[in-house]
Amino acid sequence: MKELIAGFQTVAVASVADAVDKVCGKRGYMHSSIKPRINDKRVVGPAATVLEAATDEFLPPTHALDLIDEAPAGSVIVISIAGGESEVAVWGGLMTAGAYANGHAGAILDGGVRDIPEIRRDYDFPVFARSVSPGTTLGRYKTVASQVPVEVGGIIVHPGDLIVADIDGVVVVPKDKAAEVLAMAVEIDARELEQAKLIVAEKSLRKGLAKYGRI
Image (cartoon, rainbow, N blue to C red; front, top):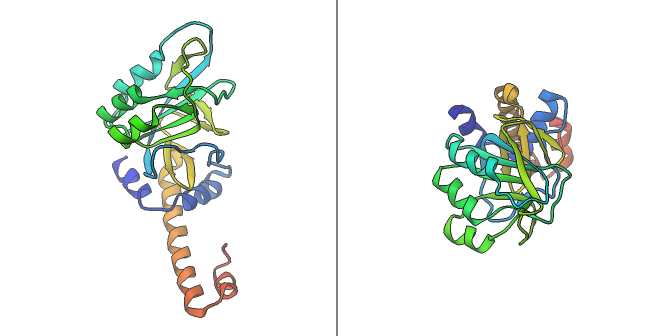
């Protein structure tokens, strides 16, 4: 796993998205609304998932809190809200403190994040979220499960799937295809580098496209 994570740290997120298209035969990138809200740091790591659902009870996000403490270091905490509510924060400063202390790689949220000044100032921890909201989940949503398949940004995420994200977006790499996707992404990166060099040398985009057939 360490070698895979190191490899995905070096390839373009766009190449990973293209590789998932080719290897898996389906889209792996999340909706563009799931975007960085704290910084421009790259996130790579296995998904640790949480599912939330509507409630009128005032309950803490127990599954998320436990998972932050129990997931292996380097995990990416992925939180989904059944129904896709975006105007509520499923992540804030205290959860960031826990994730930072436990060495997690980042958080991907199908909802909002709050306490942004605190997170930037104290932790500089990467959080990709659908929105920014000051609203609490208490009395609105509760965690109902962890380490189950969830949907975030239109993509199903299974526990252990690799998350690869930066300012280009968030890509989910199925864990059983990760090595194959990485090899394809490395190949795509290398081919694009050669193509770009040819375009600059020849001062012609058309010649680059004609030789490599890629845009």
